[in-house]
Length: 331
Image 1 (cartoon, rainbow, N blue to C red):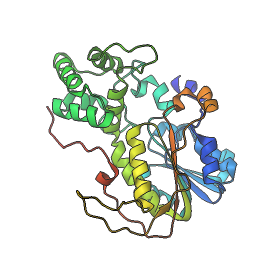
Image 2 (image 1 turned 180 degrees about the horizontal axis):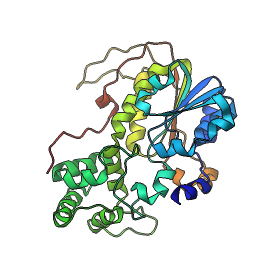
Image 3 (image 1 turned 135 degrees about the horizontal axis):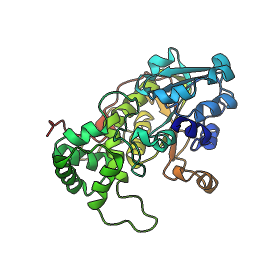
Image 4 (image 1 turned 135 degrees about the vertical axis):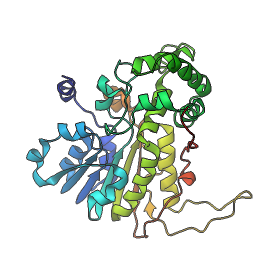
């Protein structure tokens, strides 16, 4: 069974050691907003957290961890939900929040979840296993919308060519399998040289982000963390591609008083009291030892902020460089 295979495969939390060092001392109540296989939650509990609230919208993740409360007792609470509402899940001020963004290894490794372009499975990609999946999007969105998604969410330069090929292919038959979509994308791009990424990487990333509304979820999750953290509480975010990292970096810059002095194109903005301080001057990347242990960690970046006592507030997604797709109709 796929579930049994996943349980046998050891889960390696990316950047766990540097994360725990950056947020030390670990104590009080923490919220792991992307529980997944539970690696960060376990690390926090073993590092000294009194209690960890594990939140995930994937029912499989919570099902796999259903036996954990017996191991940790009331120190671990599992919650089905999204991290965009993490302040509601917390119920009280938090000492720390950890977010590990993107798709988990568990989801990638299960062909039936439809995230992987290297394994044949239904074209799904839904983290919550609810609502419209990737097949719905690929077979119903207009060519222009598909091109916008591929370009803005995947930074795919051949977005228009790929979108046109998808529309032509689905006119003959619906695209319902991951390998079928990967083949359509691959035919639009040069054959990769040894060591280069698969041609469908960017397109699959973009479609997955669109299906799961990952960028809006991230912006709302950062706002929720700001509301939920007590003064001195830690926010630690691990990202896996440049678009996510840009949003997190810009959020922490703006919320730590880095609005800038304005320029000839934009007036100087009034600086609010900083809501975070930044203990790290730049993002932490995996070292060679971690990359040898877990090659999937190569693109990971860790950023950390420490909450001040300034009141929480709203943030403008555009100020964070969040890619926005114009709303258009179906085909």
